Image (cartoon, helix red, strand yellow):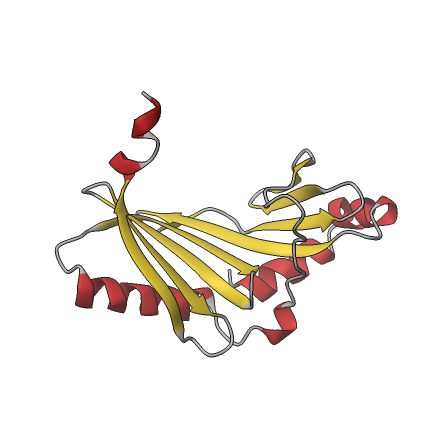
Length: 165
């Protein structure tokens, strides 16, 4: 299910309407989807409350409100609102672009998991993480309006946190 359709389904649910009655100041900050071996989890939508500095997340498969959690952000910063009406790209289009980038730059890498997050950082963008069989992480940031590749990097899962052991 594409993002806008999943979001509409969430907005019409009793679970969301109940949340909205008490959380009038919360706003959409991210949408995420994880795909593994061509199996997609449901979309996840996060709503930020600036006053409490907390995020409430909803999953869509099954439709469920998750417990409120502390916002993940730099101290003193504000999480920007995500406006789905200004998004001109679909998950399918973005994953095709990510696959084209991987094929051109890392043809030997085989993707086993895709984590796609639509968020508003300095602009609205797709933050795509490809995890490969060789434990590489390919991260792409793609403009959600123009499909322009904003940044790309590759690292190894093995590099994450090894200095702590």
